[in-house]
Image (cartoon, rainbow, N blue to C red; front, side, top):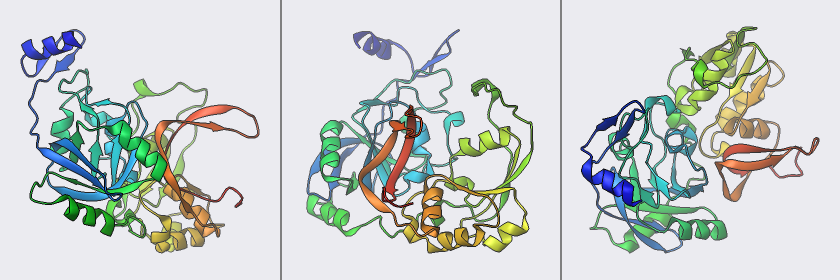
Length: 349
């Protein structure tokens, strides 16, 4: 750590080392005093980076060790503050290749320690600059481990991030208790407004090698949720394997979808509660039995509700890239990435 501090002291801003192509940034952050006020009455003092202001959202924690840029740009986090349990965030900066969409959807990010140096050969800007440009709040220098324990014990909590010193703790507490993510139609907020064709593919250099051919067959795949409603990588991989993809808004009628004669329809991931979007559930009902339908995350929940299931909210959800899942048929265990707050009852089939 001492050596790192020495480098930060002597290296100029934007120093570039070859042949390893490592960037070192020594840019001072525009930082203000900040507070996180949770609906249980607890108040956490912190420092801010990124945007300033006052925001209200649901606080969840994410156990991923890496991938903070993918989390920032994942539409599934709309309406939420994300607390990273990994203590130091920001040391690799950001780059356009790792974005899951071209904008940020979460309401804010909560971290223990903000890296003031950035060192990665793909980095194009610092973490703090990235948040500021996209008007996303971030806070650091608070006990994220204690907050995580609180969330594990009491469940996800609504909260307020604020850099506004004129607001009292009581005012911010009232804001946190007056807001609720349940019943909000967050899907329409992140969905595209008109159909378009998806053409971007993955870079072959970053692909896992498989025995199947990338372009063995060509399929016409229609997704009913937009570019701003699914993870970019999902459709990049599909396109790389020969799928022709049309992206449509979340309100696209089933009859119009069937007119396009797709080989399959994919309902993608997204934020919020499927019970808040009955129009999407009705669309699924109209499509079932007429064309193969596949769903992940929110799409899976829409399929379940269309078939008569009812979701319930987990205590604190699963958010991270390190959740073990056992296949009950084979006994094999695999590590999965999950970002969900809702489940169907285990006995429901």
